[in-house]
Length: 361
Image: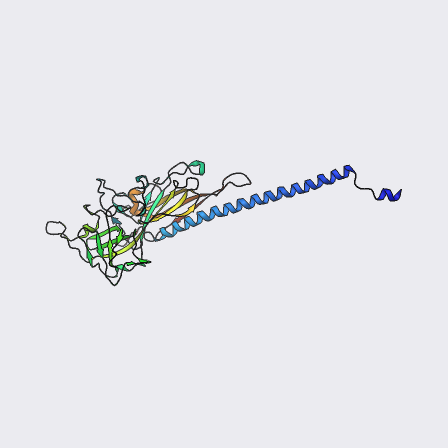
């Protein structure tokens, strides 16, 4: 009897209790694992989101810190629009692209300043993908390229219309992989002023000829304009009319950089874009849902300072500080709370060349 009793198995109740305990432990482990995976997914998405925002904002800050470097402090005059408008387009697209007119916006006062604000002139990000439903901002800034040394010698030739220039042969420009390229913006400067033009082509039979054809993406090349173009840099005769000659003129390259949000190409993942001159815009970061700028200005005549302004298009020459705010969304919905993640990063840049006041003049 003792032998039989000691060798018997589990009872049904004991088996059920053991099974329930095992299921409870296994279920708890699964829940903990799912929770850990959800947290890991959320952390990963948040890290990617913050990385996108940081990359975009760092590049904006880097360009803003150089805004105005090596260019005239009062800005560069732009030509009168040939369509009868006294303002010019500020941002087009690449030379070989076709862009609608809705992608263009205009400078104020026919001037290319170190920083040109564009409050509410950008595209609108749909609220369904995290946008505010309000137009985003854009900003355009310029600074000189010190690496290209075509300004070491005066230009050899400038056509009367300003459509072609020849640089000194000691500084060839048409060299594959270096030098000037189509879409670059050059500034011609002499005793009569300054003029900006977009390079539309380079002569195939020489290494020193640059061509500025009309109808460029930025609308800078306007040969028939009354002022603001290359032809306006000519000497004048006794009657004040251009005489077909130019004083010693030098050329240098500037970067005309525009930041904006593209919410049309891929509406579900809006992108922060950076366009330089007449080159195609390049994406910097995805899932960027908002871009806003405010500006601090100083009026030297009235010794008045104002901060956090948005609409300063008519006071662009007085900008001393740019405050940028960028909002990014996570690539997907977090598994933990089934919601999108958002982060807003801000930075302020006081460019050393944005506005200069000589208090001892």
